[in-house]
Length: 507
Image (cartoon, rainbow, N blue to C red; front, side):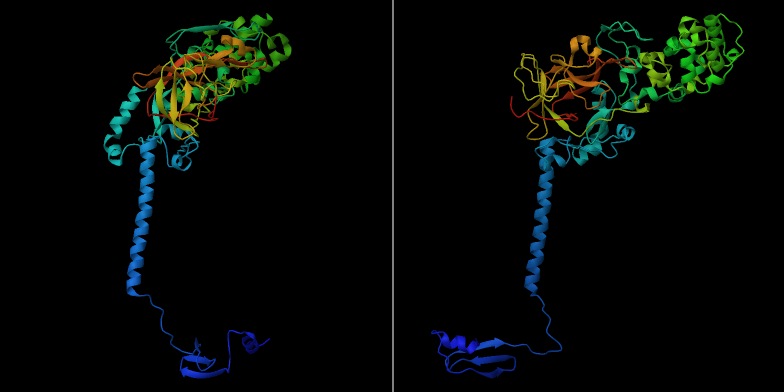
């Protein structure tokens, strides 16, 4: 249907005629009737069209608005940062503002390299830039002095300075003892006894740290001497306890190249073979002696010769033998491996890397008269880390850091004991250990200890366990050897919580 027909059929219009005439050079008019005229623009050809320039006033107003927009955004960012500093102090980063429903995740640069982390010293972030520059040295020195152990700071969070910690300088605060099951295992003691003030080196054994972060068993005597500066020539065979229960067959397997050495050239082994076999003619290699005298596979060195009469280095290659290559190396006391007690923790093949995936802040310190604390984030591997307290001796700290974390409680292990350990040794100490957490791994347990509500402070301690995971697997005891002084916290201090971290929502 044509346009003309549409208009004719429409009762609202009475069209007499349609004509087109030019009104102006750049405008056309369509005359519908004598009373209605519609103006319509038409396209014209122009080689130099005029530029579409904005009005000067409009440009000025637009520039002014852009300035205001910039200032508003900058103010919002500054306000957000100030809010974070006021609410979270120096213990948290901007992630605490973005992820308000989660515990704060603080991630230092190169945290995977614990040696770098241990040496990084960063001032607490809750100081202003001027305070940080002017008073950082004084404030940090004061904090370090107050701590019972060497401390470094990572993003304002205190972490142990492993380079200044070793088994020899770590002392137990309380005495204790434990008897072991009657299991026949070369080198295994019947009981372990320790006293207050004694070093861990005299109490702990290599096997207690098997399959943990330290990886002590991967060291050899040569590496230990290079780290500590000891001279192996100054030690005797008796100073290396593991030799007490080694047989000639054990030594041949552990010490590289020993099998091809002449027994006559090694006085300690020459005397040992003569006493075991009754044959003083020993012009043969170690390998040949083992083939000729099968009893040498079972005769323990310490039962046939006095080890304190021979130099340690009189057995060629012993300094290159990896500790875990010796039979029942797990039963060796740390202090009875030459120099091992002096090795700084950061020189071990592995180091307990602080798990700072979750960091809280000490909000309140409350003494043992408290009761009914169900929002717990402390416990044990065996019982979980949400063990509540209902016995009217619920000394604890309340932590903060996010809406969910606020009010969560970490109980004092001095008053609350939880299930721990596994295997046969899991029954030691009644199967109990102080409640706590493991932000530093399995090597030890981090336990809150003395709670002082009047001063708003709480001390913490390290607790260790006994493990026997050799060819006879006795499992591990609860973490009950301790306390060894660790950190001291005051209200508003950051505290590493580690993972896993779940906060109960209701009792």
